[in-house]
Amino acid sequence: MKKIFFGFLLFGYGLAFSQTTPESSNGLNRFRANYDVGFYDLNVKVNPTTESIQGTVTIRFKALENLFRIQLDLVPNLEIVEVTQDAQTLKFLRKESIVWVDFPEPLRKGKITTIQVTYRGKPQGIADASQVGGVDWRENLSGKSWITVSTQHAGGRLWWPCKDDFSDKADSMRIHVVVPKELTGVANGHLESVYKNRPDGYWSYNWRVSYPIQPASVTLHVSNFQRIQDTYEALDGAQLSLEYYVMPDRVAKAQTHFQQVKTMLNTYEKIFGKYPFWRDGYRLVETPFQGMAPQGVIPYANFYRNLPTYDFDYTIVHESAHHYFGNSVSYRDQADAWISEAFATYAEILYLERTKDYLTALERLKEYRKLIKNTEPLVEPSGVEELPKTQDQAYKGAWILHTLRKVVNNDSLWYRTLRAIPKRFAYQVITTEELVRFFNQELAIDCTPFFNQYLFHADPPVFEFTSVDNPKRFKLTYRWRTKVPGFVMPVRVTFGDRYETLYPTNEWQTVYLKKEDGQQFRLDTDRFYIFGSHLPLE
Ligand SMILES: [Zn+2]
Image 1 (tube, rainbow, N blue to C red):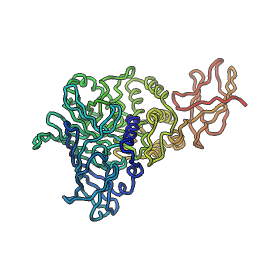
Image 2: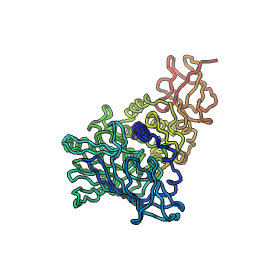
Image 3: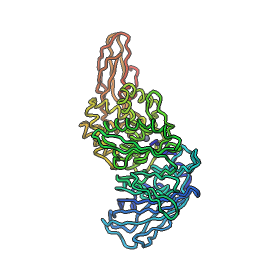
Image 4: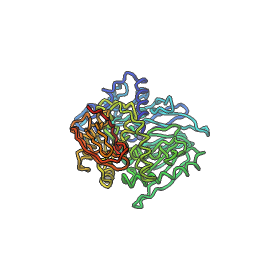
């Protein structure tokens, strides 16, 4: 999930519907907070000739208070034909992308209700292949339709009516993709059946998602895909279904290249535990452009190519990590999006450490370090849906986790904690505060000032020091300069290859370090993401 895409997406969205006010349409407002979606059944017919869709979504939800109105979301260019409850027509009101549905009788708190929304129209297209947000219609090399939905985050409302808020995962879902019979419709979940006897001659591909899912993560791909099947055997012997839907002329290439999926799954299983969507299987679907990582189905547009030096496919290794962080452990608010990006990027580093070695992983980290901008905090205020302007959530985020590992300085504790996160928060939506609290508990240290400095301020901690350098002795006076008071973090310093661990605070301390003649003082920035500031003596 590249946040830059998200940025483009909402920007484009804002241009198209400039009257949309985020205050009214987004966030957990009154008519979203009053109900909880349990199940969606989305039935959507895709017509490549007219580049349009039509469908019905059945929504089962529980009233969390006595209510007479709920909010759904759907972009205004898609028409709502009707909303019904038990065959009775319900009134609805639309404003920009909001759809308020009113009930003739108030629903009592705790009541479970099912409504159906029928809709149709031409969804927003994707103007540029690098932008994500809408439905892309094109033909592949064999002249067949190649249709790609790409909506993650901005999100479901671009092509289907739903409660489009990060905080509410449906417990499960069904998706019926209805397509001309020469095409295959692929969605999230597990393919339960294909219905071939529709009066209109279309075929219905019936998918079932048997895990909680955010509407923004629901996706759809249509083409004359060739399906490649494979199996991954977990450490306990359980079998995971792997499926690759690729262009007909890429089958041989894909069969060879996608072997690394098993290496990736095995590596992540050892670090983070079993693949979180086991019953749904793992799927790659060939797309004309790269997207983010919808649950269980990763769009693949990386030319069957590995990164030089590191020998892995970025899409497979990075995007699959989002199944753990993003799809299973999801964030509740845009402000907490760093959790997903930081962990997925750090997962790449750990993947390299396991499949190559620590130094190769460090090389990759150092490349990422050069890309960090430090122009904005990783966490923006919650509720405002502010989008990051840089990739710091990924690059700096990975460095924060790497730094914390070195602060902890106990790899068995570190890996135990990393593994505990996807287990403790599986299929949930979490906030930054919950995650920090969890680190504090598991690591048994107070990480709050650490995370406060790294996440809520643009600048990393600065190691300020003065020095008097003699041939055999180095007088070092030092402290942390941080925005957060009470910041404590160990750091390593060195002359040559002999390291000393110091425990700076925000107060000045002095130490005399032994050294050899001619050796230069250096901060260990391979382990800690910090800046150094050498002040002149007064
Ligand atoms: Zn990502």
